[in-house]
Amino acid sequence: MRAPPIHHWPACAGQAIRHEGLIVIAVDTPETPIRDAARQRLRQALSEVLAEQGIADRLIVEAGRPPRLERHPGIGLSCTHEPGLSLAAIHFNGPVGIDLMRLDAGLPDTTEIRQLASDYLGPGMVQRQLADPPAFAAAWTAHEASLKCLGLALEEWTPALAERLAQCRCMRLALPASHVGTLCVSPTRMPA
Image (tube, rainbow, N blue to C red; front, top):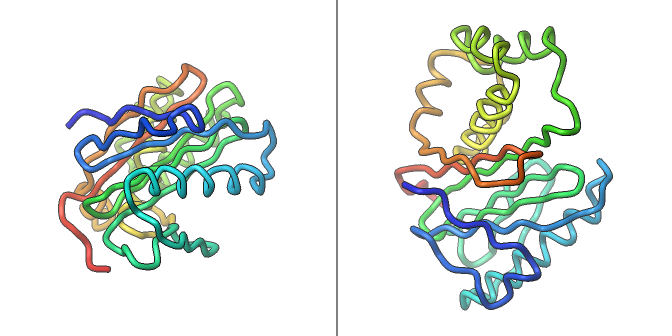
């Protein structure tokens, strides 16, 4: 499965095309870690793109939960933010997760990468991640996107968690070199 094209909002008005039931929206946002304006712009973009697809519904956003539609619970939504760029994914066929990491903002130092990789990505990932810090960003965004897709909170690696996350199909997104992003979908439709 090829990753869907990324539609830049608002330039994508009238152009958002479903790709295997998926739409990814990119929104330029303020260069600040404070996400209020980014969230507002992304909600507006989501509402407009969904309306273009013939879906007029109330977007429900609650802290700590993925966004969802009031009358269309089978449509998966996911969002991610970094200063300067936010992404949203729409999956018309079920759950979806998306995550983004900005590389030019500086990755964690080697000690922190070692600890994060060991704690969250599994013992086999530590040496691979230290050898190539952008690989850490790719592995981390895939991990976070998979968790979002399955509706799970961040938790430390266990073989059981790895088995659950392996259910997701993950695709690296074509983003500017300053960012790494991953989109994940579940191969089976999850109950609403």
